[in-house]
Length: 279
Image (cartoon, rainbow, N blue to C red):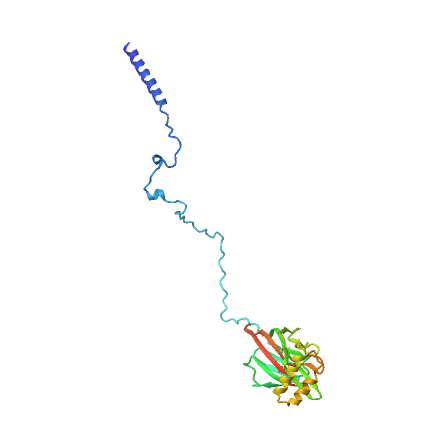
């Protein structure tokens, strides 16, 4: 009888314990409300508050070169052996030995066959960057410029002047002149043709009758002409309305060439030549 009561008591306790554990459900506190101080968690540990995005500085190992490198072959022993010869820089061909204007600069030589011109200043142009000549004889138009050296470009410019020619003489009108811009000269193989210097191709200033008579007066006074002669010269052009109308003529006063190139070391150089034509 006592054992039966003991088993009943144990069974009753076990069932009661089972139902008490089943009734322990978690409490729902609801959503977090902004501004509610009871839902704010305060943390004072800086290690737990730091920004892991900006504070993170990972160390990334550099990838190793996995390509198998072959050992370099040892340089052959050249002791006692002759070094291969280095090709010499070819020298420019010499200019032909013919009569003409000849200018020999350090990096370039210039020849214009058929021109007889007198050099102004020192004859040694080795250290000069330019040269000025006065034409003695020959025709510049239609000539050829022959050069030596490494030439990259040749340019030409000229000055034209209006000249009065009649039975009273020849009078250059310096105030009626034109100086052109630089123009590239066509050519190749260090030979460049001289063109556009004939009387029909020369540029001239646009001037009316009044400007022409004023230019005549200035040029005559500069040469100390008498007043009567100046009046006669002005009268001779009273019907002229253009600077190229007879007895006015457009003539070449001077021509200049600029020669650009490279020296033996690849450095750029520029030389100029000017020929003045006497009036």
